[in-house]
Length: 124
Image (cartoon, rainbow, N blue to C red; front, top):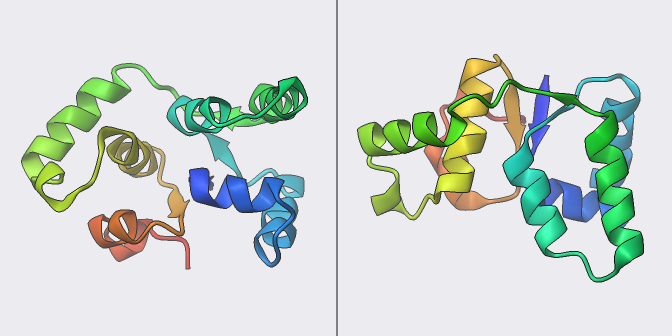
């Protein structure tokens, strides 16, 4: 399974290639996992009600992970790995923990996040 981060979703919603085509393919194959921190970031950036509706439609129809204590787990993981000193914020750590706990890979354009990931959790 694949967790696209906010940067990939933005490229998708802007119809930028190759991200649009690739994510569309993964969506059709039901290979995408959604987590609320990413969709929260997307919703934070909407410009109008139409954009909000589109993002919520995706949220409502995607497979989701169990997010019980996700922020707590992310805080602990960040502390253990000293990620804050590398500029990796709590939302990105939530994404990392979600991937680890769900045997998923993260698809991102964020260089800080890529550096914080073990190769096995990075979508190539």
